[in-house]
Length: 91
Image (cartoon, rainbow, N blue to C red; front, side, top):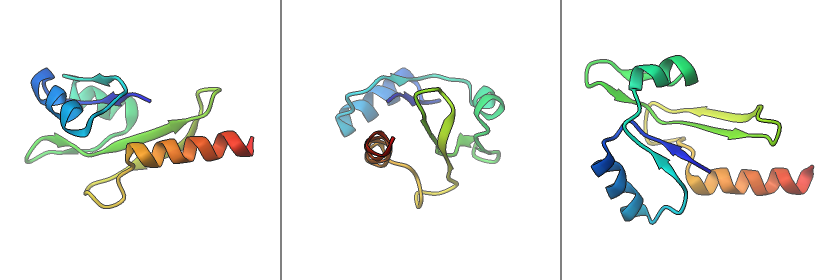
């Protein structure tokens, strides 16, 4: 598992500490590049990136893609782990 963020290093480190994340968090990514490469959405007026999450199969194809414009329906780390465990059991 890995997280990608457009936040500054300082803000990303706060998130890692606050949520006790145990996986890598890449930070200071270019929001417009993430739109181009991942299909994420940007709120143009306030210029922030909406949450985007993916679960990949071992062959690197996409099992699940989640795009969210609000806090409801965002994929959490626990969601991704639960789905990954399920997929491993059923394969």
